[in-house]
Structures are given as C-alpha cells and as structure tokens.
Length: 210
Image 1 (tube, helix red, strand yellow):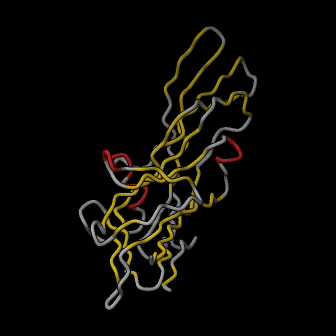
Image 2 (image 1 turned 45 degrees about the vertical axis):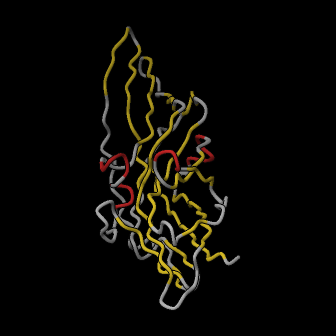
C-alpha cells in the first residue's frame, strides 16, 4: 500500500487580509469581514490508495496538482470560500460577532484512479476525512463538510467518513471532487472573531472485488 498524508511542514499557511465594508448607523458600527478556510493540499500527501491502484490528484488541466492548488482551484479558480461574518460594536464596548448560515466551497481537484500494471481492479470505494488545525469550525460554528464527486446530473455528495458504493473505474477513471463546508444555523453573540482555519483532507481509495 502506498500511503500519503499531508505534512504540516509542507503546508503553507497564508495570512488573512481582512476585507471590510463599513456601515455607520447611529452609535453602532457593523462591518462585514471574512475568515479564510485554506488548505495547501499536495499531490504527494493527501491520498491513501489500496494495493493495485495508481491514484493521483490533478488540476482541471490534467496536470499533477502542485502544493496549494487544492484550495486555490475552488470556486472556479478563485480560491477557497471564506466564512462570512459581521460584527457589532456599540460605543467603546468590545465587538460581538455574527456568523450566518452559509455553504462554502473549500477545495477541488480531479481524482484519477487507474489500476496498476497487471492489476485486475475494476471497482473502488472512496471515502475521506478532514482534520482541522487550530480553530475547529465544527465545534465553533457547527460546520459539516461533504465531498461532491462528479459533475452535473450524475454528481453525488458524501459525508465525512461515509463510503461510496462501488465505482466502476473501467468506465470512468477520472472524476472531479469538490470539498464543501456547510454552516446550518446563524450564530450570534460570539466574543471572538472567526480566525483563519486550516485543514488536512485525506482521501481513501479502496479496491473492491466482487
């Protein structure tokens, strides 16, 4: 088995540059800001593939994905969506923050799955997990993640830890995968502003033999 996992030494954390729109209304000031969700996923460290499989992450040009491309490929190449939030400050009091219900695209890649030489594997099962580094949006904002596999009418979504049904790689060995985050409810009155969020995603590809 060839094992890959993302190393913190290879992950480049990018600083957040706040983007704010200022609204002044009486004695209260409300501003809109964003907290980035960024993961620098590389081709060498984010896959665990079973024996008999050659699995790669590619960008949408069919090239082997380079460091940081997973999050930069999100949203049509505009980069990972950021958590939108606002804050309210009255007079000189400390601000309180508000995170609205929202869906975010966090990363995307094309996964290429081919049988190794002399392998008779025709079907695979895929699943994934995400580990948050530092700030944990699951506990703080109730965020769930899901992985969308494919495009258009044949696309389907996978919850973290959930396994796909057997997928025929002899018919289609290349699929787009998109990591999304979903915050289901509004959260208000937070004392701490949402900060930069970093994650490690690992995708598992297991041979399936009938």
